[in-house]
Image (cartoon, rainbow, N blue to C red; front, side):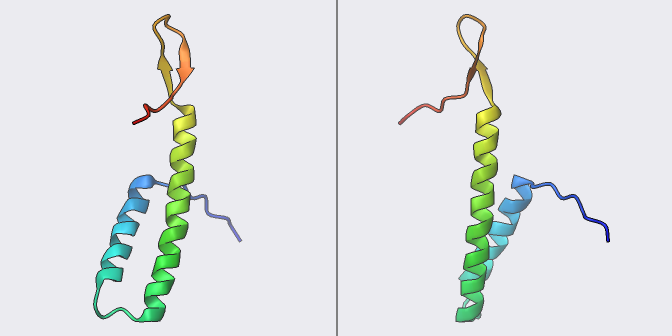
Length: 76
């Protein structure tokens, strides 16, 4: 039995989420199926959030002295 190595792609995840949203908006979807789809979408969103957090931690920016600093998003 071989273990498949999979990589997580945000682009693919967003496409899946779009498909799930379309499914949830369908008037023919059953209550049970909508609940299953919602749960799967929430799990996928958690993976997306974790992936984005990892990327943000890796992003570095040069400061005025030419040194690397961790990325700090601007607060609104």
